[in-house]
Image (cartoon, rainbow, N blue to C red; front, side):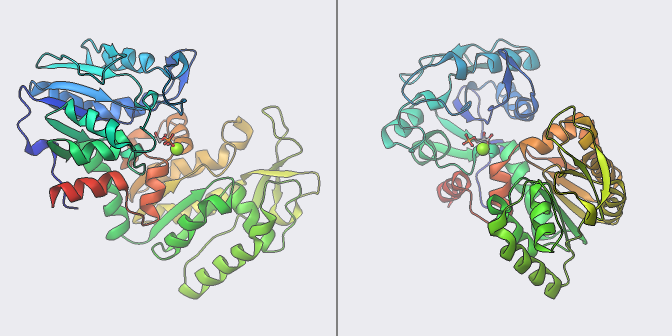
Length: 391
Ligand code: 3PG
Ligand code: MG
């Protein structure tokens, strides 16, 4: 990775424009998970300690461009950020014409996606953003897979464009896990659909020693193996692809372990009655909502002997207590394992918070889509432009 880094610059008195990913969940006007805000704190503190004039920008949600809306305002983020930093963080609603900031102070610029041209990486908007600063710092790993004005275009025109410490540590952790991993490398990829995770699954088969799948993905694999999955979520048109993936992995000696028991219910609800069944005994009116205890133990053993663990996705519907035991057990196994463990994705972070294992994971990524695209081997556009500017 050839990048200029924020740490290499003297920021005193400079106008420093930092792009963070402060796209956090908000409920009733309050930030409900501040993990992404906390991850950005060291970068912001460093700039403040250097007595930079700090301008922070981020998106929130997917608002309509060209209109201000309270629903997508960063106001709750400014409030939480100010509490965490212990300094005022004024939110600037109109900022494209320039913002006055004193050295050692910080302002938050209102949602970048309120501006026309953000999503399409518009040149005019990118240039106007670049004019706001002496140094542009890209630190939003979670949005690094998007080529937008605030993540890409601005980096082309800013006097200096460099990578922030969070972006650098995210890239370093992923490179450690994927490029020279301690073996065996075990990945957990869970989610509702094979189709949306197909490229990840395929590229991981070229890298991992064991691939644990979960959720609807597992149901489709089970159906491909001829098991009845009842009313479970699965993709009929992906059965042949699953068979091919199983054949490929067998040829390469890569294990894709299947659950031997599952937790089923007759309805998808918080009140549904859970029942543990051998994998071959799922009834026509039942759906699989978690892996069973034997499977959790079997997968847990694979995790405890791993050298590196990559985790994306909970293996069951852990939002409902009775279908959360599989995810809880794997979370515990990852936490106890001596492996270098790397986790990413919104649902995964929610599971990590729920089971309180933050301290036991080697690296928790702030990225969901960006994390997966990196794992797929794709170049992240926001990183690519920084490399070009450094070259
Ligand atoms: C995310 O949470 O996925 C990132 O912040 C990117 O947001 P987006 O998917 O709306 O571009
Ligand atoms: Mg996304």
